[in-house]
Length: 615
Image 1 (tube, one colour):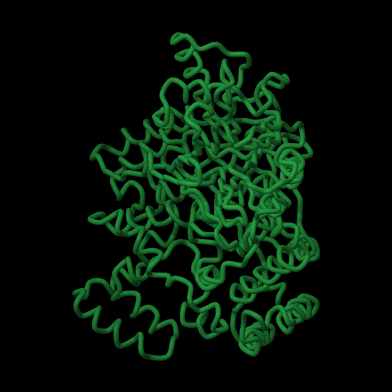
Image 2 (cartoon, rainbow, N blue to C red):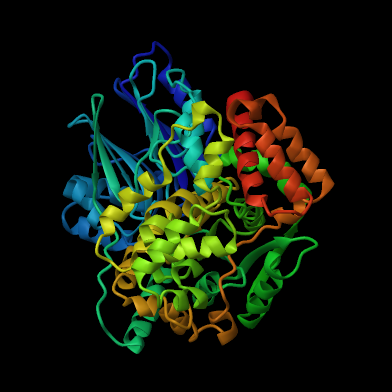
């Protein structure tokens, strides 16, 4: 796991090497072991290395081909690199190292952009081809690794890299707030658009590559999730799941450094841990809370069953509030998923023992694990009514005061495209508009964002549509981004064996009822997991990574802390603060649960202070 930065076609009369060094210093947490620079008249590249495979210096980056006509900077892991290396050796390529990095650059020589069809792993990379005078950039299938780029510069230069904060050290970069990003953020809780909170800075989409040439950008897709169910028995798919996931875990544990695993009480991390059988597992919970807010005892119990050493940490509210500015700094953009906070402390704990951890992200999205994918018993009964009737009642209820009954009736008469935007849904869009000042109301609507995704999955059943939306928006925008940023904040590599293209190929063939069965979600996966897990763990309902923010915000200490931010001049720039205080006061008094509304705004204000007032 590493980090890289670069720029091309800079016209500023400055020392390019000095600039790239400053940019590299901002991402030293991604690669504290060493750094490397390449610079010519057109391109400057910087790299920070975290040593994982081939600890020798010949494995350092930037990496070159034999005649040094191609230069690579690469972040991630290619798990099938050994097979590709043998293939390339047979085709006459020579290698100086035993790294996956060198495999990429020789594969580019041999196959061009088609090399992307051969890679199995997580990656973001840039290859400068001096002969063609082009920069080839690519991001992995699921978006496990981040890759940002911009031309919002005073000299029209092109900047790219693993983290946006590196751009701030480039004197040509124009740091501006993207006003259109705030409105959708309030609903989604993360930066959902391709353009980030920094105006003119974009994320390269997962499964896409880019060719840059003298100011011109060409972006193309090379992969997409393709759900095409193939009818077969449960036992057939269970056998396939067991062998395919075991194979993925075997690939994901390839390393020249110590490997452990994150472990909660749920099936996903438990299944990975049972297959990996590492020496150490790591868990985090919240002090003074039990049950959903502290699953460390369950993690310890499973570790004992598997004869694995478990390390745990109980986090306090004081620690969470104290570290929130640091967490948002590492995130680059505001991200109010409360689970980012414990994940930061979990990575910190693991970093004291290992350099690589395996985790369970992605299983819910590809195997159908979220409760929202299922229909509640009450809704199943309600849907006996013809849709035309439910539709009429839905339209009527949408004009009535909002409560549990009207919300239920409204939802019951909506198509999936109207009601489902992904696993995160914080602010109702009308509430967000009422809260925002006029300058920040112009961002895209929620429906305009999700409609672009639904267009790509027409004709599928509702469950498949919801999974696809989560794969395209929620997974890369929230889950994988915080996994990357929180782990690298502590210089450890997080690997996700469920998000392997071979596992995805298998999962996409599962009939819908083997994903979301009438009796439980992730039905086929849970059945497969029972071979290596106690049934109690395989069948445990999904909890996620809940954080007791609603309780904290009813304590006077944290109420006052948030209130100070909400009445600040900073808050008045963006929000009608009387509305903010109404949410805060009603929550503090126990009249309503506005914890997520409050936290989402508070996180944004912390982020803005960090990047636009203190940077």
